[in-house]
Length: 306
Image 1 (cartoon, rainbow, N blue to C red):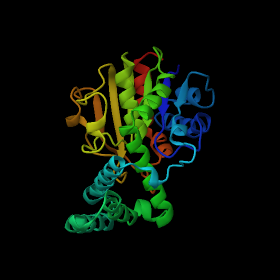
Image 2 (cartoon, rainbow, N blue to C red; image 1 turned 60 degrees about the horizontal axis):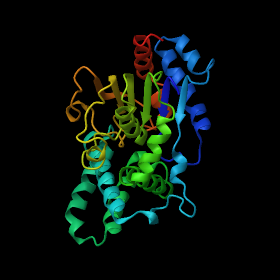
Image 3 (cartoon, rainbow, N blue to C red; image 1 turned 120 degrees about the vertical axis):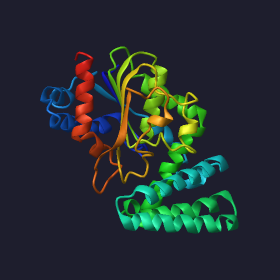
């Protein structure tokens, strides 16, 4: 069991709980130090003890013999969901990207896709133009087309598997539950991990001082929001404070304010575009290292009497 439970996002299948803790904890400690709490920062990293903070690792569940996460293993349902998710990302870019060129490019592509969708045959063919449009946006284009496509398809695959495969979902939640107990004071989830963390907070059933979600897709209504558990979505009843942080250019993150989507949010949920992660808007370590992240964690643990 851990005081702070960390939940990673997509594309971590080649790593482990130990390697991810080694990546996350220095960044989290740095954010806390910036927030003016060096004692907690030292506890998290320099003087870390077993049970202080643990990574709930589930990446290996996406590695299957003979199936290394390629696009060909997606079912028809998963391709339909993948297309919808890619479309939501493209609409996010059109409405809020910090770069005018990306906003204009995304808007043009959306118009073009709307005009040609009836001519596209087959589920995979329908998804292809949306993926191609995403590849042209700066967050992906800088990676190179071939590599960016692998990243995007892998992201879509893992999100859709969690949302549609009951066995995967239960196995992931079991991994998180291994680290949650009466002493748990914070659950921190990034990307798909924020969805996992949100559902875990519901399953936890005990008072939880802090749920912290970073770069979260929870507000993607037609793709993620309507597939979360339980339904209808709501603030987990035991959570005293839920803080949701997002970078404006993080296409995975959904909306600046999740409040209207989650009943019970008044006085509990603090949500908005509050950080700037520079050239890597979805990077977990960049979210964790921010002063705002440190302030949130320090305040929650202080209230709980650490």
